[in-house]
Image (cartoon, rainbow over all chains, first blue to last red; front, side, top):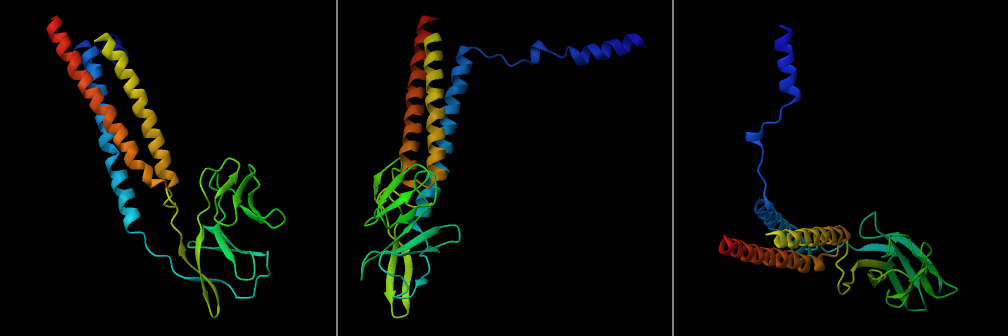
Length: 173
Length: 63
């Protein structure tokens, strides 16, 4: 009885079966590595295909009324959400007839960018990133990409956001 | 084959770094860069395949 229990425990503890072990030599390792390289390459296809499809069939964003025609004074700004609720944007009135609108999620690490009227720049307070209010391009700081610009349409009853302007090398998140 | 072993360690490291960069680009929405990362992955794979064939042949010749 005790002997059988002892044998059972030995079988459980010393369960290394040399005949069942995977024999891996250098050539086997290199073959497996090659398979890994191939799997990484083939595994990237769906991502490329999906990204290409997303770029081609980007749905047009609906028009959204942001403000009345004379609601903002010169130099003032108004925040809004466009085209989705998680994408904050800002409408800025630069002069009598000049308006600009950008997404205010900083292209560096996503901090909210604000319109600094005194300096005339879009400013990210987190890491001192500065953007040009004329075209959203980077003036200084760690951001590498310009702010995505919102396309505006001026109608009788107010100013509408009607889509996003395409930026070279950036298709938006 | 010992030399090939080291070369493949290097290839695996390069491939893992490329996959990591590609994932970051995908999650950040920079979809225009993904094709180039995929091509780089393919390039490493093809070079690895050629190297594998070369060392196999060299091994057979030695034997």
